[in-house]
Image (tube, rainbow, N blue to C red):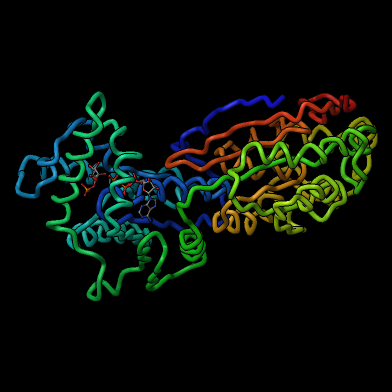
Length: 446
Ligand code: ATP
Ligand code: F6P
């Protein structure tokens, strides 16, 4: 029996702080016609940077405009409409002012100005405001003229936008198409005479990328991330290894074999996966280099579908240093101060001679980049590593992610949607100990 639980990620409006790039202030200025994925890109960049502990926030001009004009029709966006022009400029001004305030008061590092910024004059104006406040500017243009894709974007996200709440989707789509036409009348792509700007142009969803004048490390990290994004439908499956002999003994770390019940889960996994993968879909299996994940995934790799398989050192479990091979009770007895310190700040606590959750996130960054580039992937890994990857997709705050319960013998399917990630859990229904420990307890696994 397969149990399914569906839930949605939090939206990414939360801001995060703590950064080792505190001297940098970058305004990422989105450029492009409506329905070109600017908001999606903005939200993803915020989520990615927040996951890396870089303070980031998106400023969506549409939300500011909505305060005065909640449901405009297409003619509001005609530049001949003087009232429309005034209100749109006021919205842009309010967003830029808040953005600058955020840099100055909240030690912001990367802000995303999410608007069309579709004329050279508008882009100059934003640059002047940023220059005057010592904020670097990085323009990100999304350019795409594939009519079919734009129509599907409109149907997917625009007809359900608050701009069209309560309206007929067909009429909403038609109005939005007319809104785009009004923008097209004045839209100027970033071109030769803007060579002094730092910019990246993503053409046809990254089919072609043009990069100009990237100035520093953080800018190049953002650009590299953008270059890896795609919007093909796909899912990511996450599973811990089957129950191990160390799990049975309540010991952490190590390189134990899977238990008899772990072996049952390994055998059940191909069917569990098959029940949620389309018949013709290709799937690649990633494991750590530790025996328990390799053993758990071995029937998947051997399935008639012949899934490709890759072992990653970066997916190995959080290194518990001198505590490797101990039970939580033994750690509390031998290193009581460490035990308390870890409970106080589990994300940042680094085991003596080992790692913290923060360290694991840093080593997982190439994995996230590779996941963004890839299509269907199943990752068989470990409790702490799975929490970190899950936190990236579901936008889970740092203080919460190390305490998330991720049971054994459960397959998690994550499917990226326009502005969120959809989650479905499939329970293997094979008993296993719980390795979850609440704050303050030394509970033996049971
Ligand atoms: P608006 O100016 O109206 O706010 P927008 O440019 O912010 O529009 P989004 O709301 O982000 O557009 O559109 C999301 C849709 O765009 C999704 O359906 C997504 O699949 C698609 N999309 C994402 N990236 C791109 C891209 N680079 N080019 C075209 N479409 C994209
Ligand atoms: O039309 C799409 C949109 O996102 C509107 O919701 C918003 O008011 C506008 O773009 C913001 O861009 P601009 O600065 O060009 O008015």
